[in-house]
Amino acid sequence: MLNGAVIGCGFFARNQLHGWQAVPGVRILALCDRDPVRLAETAARFGVTRTYADAEAMMAAEDLDFVDIATTVAAHRPLVLAAARAGLHAICQKPFAATMQDAREMVASMERAGKVLMVHENFRWQSPVRALLDALRDGAVGRPFFARFSFRSGHDVFSGQPYLATDPRFIIQDLGIHILDIARAALGDVTRLSASTTRINPAIRGEDVATILLDHASGATSVVDCSYATRRVPDTFPETLIEIDGDQGTLRLEAGYRLVIQRDGGTEIRNVSPPALPWAERPWHNIQESVQVIQSHFIDCLRNGSEPETSGRDNLRTLALVEAAYASARDGSRIAL
Image 1: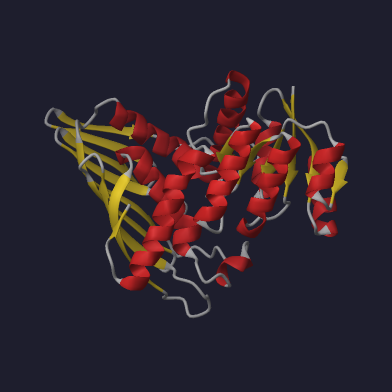
Image 2: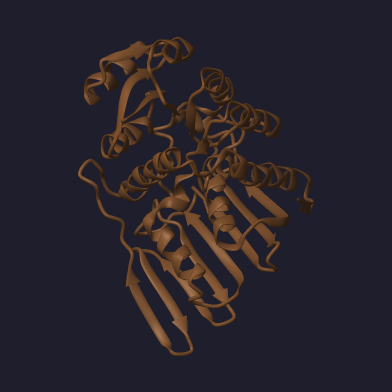
């Protein structure tokens, strides 16, 4: 049995707590949050009896194997460093760190401690995206040379996470990081990028539309486009729509979770709809299912001593794309990585 604790009881943490309840051989012993009301409500809802306002005190007092850091980005660095000092494995929400320097320090501290550090980049773990990646890696369309990764919606994300409206960085940091991570998973690392951003919603501080052009080391080119200002009926939130051209055909992940594989021999259509877990709610069920999948992967890595697919070190490359995209949009430049 592996013992864990969740730090942060905010909007998304309920998904993580539901997910942990379904991962065999894991129990959440304690919760930590600075808001006493939110902490008490979450503990009662999930049957966790030990609660703390101070994360380091919790790490010292409890017999833990890992911590799940479900806080906003400002708290990630001190909490990951505290986990390293306490000799604990950690899974950390994205965005991983506020700066690249912080991220590198966090990765180095966990490596010195000999502990596993994984980033909760859950979009690439969504079952429809995994189905597309599996088909691509199985050679369904040959060598890919172009792709578009698109997330466009008018969904009100601010009602559940009001802090998103106040951050000077919004869509690339909060959503684009996931779509960039999918692009890396599909086509490999990036050598150059250029980006443009705009703000359509006057009530928010940061950008809510971004378009990013990527050159991959594999020779492929891709476009990542994100919008929370797109009005469409039906709204496709929270689906990522993907099209990949290869030298032997085309893969498309379409709205409604349809995976279309077109080759010279014809067209194959697969239903890759994610399961709706007992605790999930539509349309969030796609993201909610991926939480449980990524947690299971984390625990498998702890048990077999392997590096997570979305490890802290791997996530440095995704975070570098976020920083480069903001620099490109600010300066109107093309950034080499």
